Image (cartoon, rainbow, N blue to C red; front, side, top):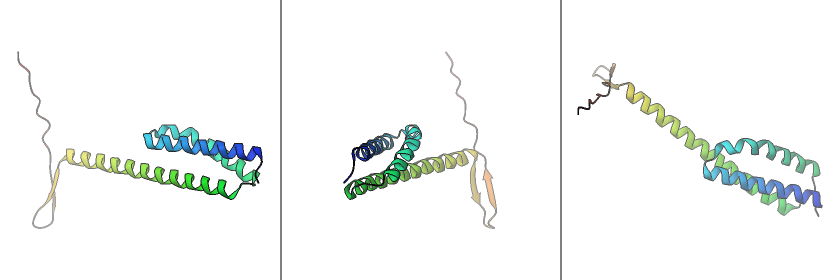
Length: 119
């Protein structure tokens, strides 16, 4: 059996995990900064109380796991964008080819042609 203080703390953590999920799904990564320290404080408080019902623990573990998966997906997306941007920078620097002997050659890309507007 749990007491009222434990139930309030569990409810606060549950609500925070839902806010974290909403921020992740909305792509609001800056909104996660404040949630992390609050989440850690609530988890510490729950650990100190230590009298959670099995159902409460399982529900919280599911939500924490779900959010962890969402965070990992966001990280992978950010890495993919960074890789793509690096590839685009490399392409702008020029084309790299190899000759028959295996020597690498860089062919610079011409600067963009500027159009002149005439009236």
